[in-house]
Image (cartoon, rainbow, N blue to C red; front, side, top):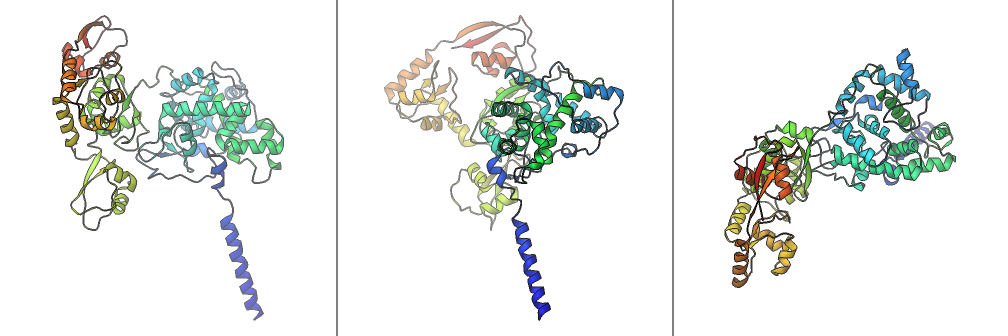
Length: 539
C-alpha cells in the first residue's frame, strides 16, 4: 500500500514538472516587446514562407567560434589595422573579434569568399544610400553579418532578406509581407527600410555598437539591459551581462553580434592583404524600376522581355508568385535594354492576368478549403482572385488558381471587349492636368463608373487618351467629341542625348514606346546614338 502511494506521488510530481516545463520559455513574449528580435522568436507563417527560391541561412552565420586560429603576420597586421577609406566606426579588439576574424579567414574562408561575390551587385547601392543619409559606410557590412548578402535568405525564426527583417518590423518600415510578395527580399526597398531603422536606433542609443546590438535583439531588450546594469556602452554591458537575471540577460548571439560585425569590417578593408578577391565597385547591378499594375502576369512579362523566369526571379526576389498582387502596384527591376519591351507589354490589356494562373474545373466534393489546401493558396486569396463572396461552388464551375508555375493562357475577354467598345464610343480626350476624379466630377459620374466603362485597372491617364463617359447627354458628348478631334498634335524634333533609350524618351514625353517606333520606323533592337534626331508627336 505504502509503495503504491509512493508510486502515485512520484507520478504526480512528474506530471507537475512536465506541466511546468511545458510552460517555461514563453518565446512569443519577446515578439510583443521586441518585434525585430531575431533570437527565440515564433516563425510567422503567411501562406507558405518556403516558396520557390527561399533559402536557409548559411550555417556559418550561426556559428560562434570557441577558439582563436593561429594568424599569419599579414593576418595579424590586418586584425590590428584601423584605417580604411570607407570606414569610420570605432573599433574594439576583443577576444571575440579575434575569434571571428580567424574563423572567416580560415575555416569559413570559402564561405566568406562566396559572400563577397554575392555582395558585389548590391554593395554600390547600399553604400550610396548610406552616404546619402549621412550614415557610416561601415554599415554596408551589416548584411554580411545578417545573411551573407543573400536576398533569398530566411532564418529559422522567420527573419528574411539581406537585412533579415522580422515581419512586424518590415511592415513598420514600409515593406509589404504577404502571400503575394515579400519586400524584405527586395534588395532596394529593404536597404532603404534598414537605413531608416538604423537611424532610429542610433538616435535612440547615441552609440553605433548599441544600435547594432538592438538591430539584432530588439531595442526593448537592449534598453532594459542598460537600465538594469547602469551601463552606457556595449562592451561594458556584455561584461556585466552575468549580473542580469535570466529574463533580462543578453543571449550569446547578441553578445557576439558586434564582435562579428567588427571582424567582418576588418577583413573587408584588407581583402587584398588577406588574399581575397577585391570588390569591383563598377559591377553594381544596373537595373531600371518599372511600376507593375495589380494582377500582372509576371511570367508573360519576363517572356515579353526575352528573359527566362529564373533570370526575372534573380532580379526580383520579392515576388513570391508568377502574378503580381491584384490589389496594388509594385516595383519590378529590369535591365535597361528591355525596358521598351516591358513598357509595351504593360501598356497592353493582355498583361493581366493570364499565364501565371491555372484554370481549374470544380469537381464533385470540392470546396474552397479543399482546393485551397490542394494548391497551397489561402482561401481568402482564392476567393479574391475569383471575385467571389459566396462560400458555395458548383461542379463544372471554373476557377483561377494563381501562382504555381506556367499555365495555359486564359484571355480576359470581358476587359478587352469593354476597352474596344469604349474606344469606338469615345467622347472625351484627356487633357493636360486631367485626373479621373476631375473628369468624373465635371460630368457627374463616379470614378468607379468611369473605370468600369473604359476597362481601366488604375487611375493613371495619359494626355491624348480617349475615354467614353457614360450617362453624358448628347449635347455634351458632341461638344467633347468636337473638342477631342480639334486637339492638334505638335511634332517635336528631338535630339538624342547620351544615355537616352526609347523607353526614357517615351516616358519624358508621355507617349508609348510603340508609337515612337512607328513614327521613326524603329524596333526594340534599334540603337540610338547621341546626336540622332527622332520625331515625337505630342499634344
